[in-house]
Image 1 (tube, rainbow, N blue to C red):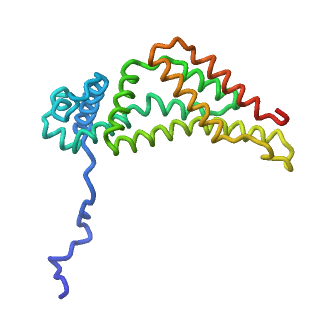
Image 2 (image 1 turned 180 degrees about the horizontal axis):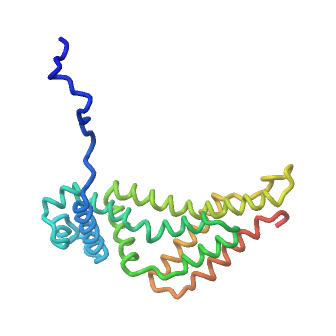
Image 3 (image 1 turned 90 degrees about the vertical axis):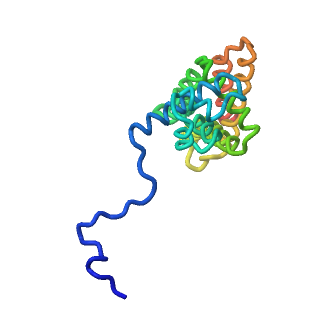
Length: 225
């Protein structure tokens, strides 16, 4: 049966909205307050206190409103994982992607990694690792972040590989060249080890160690090395 003129929308009718509505500015502010409260509780090192109810209370938001933005505490943890990305991953990505030679970018990476990690960020990483051991969703999210972080070092050594290829004749391009994945993963593992030592109070000066490691690995990729 054909629709009547009254059933059919006119040319000026507003199309039906689909999908979730964009959050309002107030909604974004509420969400940010909840994430900030979640960070505070996680950094406090008391896993038993990290509940949606306590996060809501700390942020001054109703428990129901907390669940409007986050289904459960795992969602809050995942939001914190994303929230801290600009504090440890993005600066490294910018450093390895910036214009300049391998040596210049490597110096910038070492400078970034030599900066003391703030107490809150250090405690947050520890708390997130604990949750990753007990929650598969957190583990997958955190592992994805670390893959992205390790990828920065691979990108750095890809710059070196490109420089080495440019130094060779076209017929020898790539011969005996750099393995960015192996070298990048090696440096990432060394950085992890230094961070673990520092977290235990070891007085290791990571800057010179990393500079020497990266310089030595780079020198070992030269033809005839």
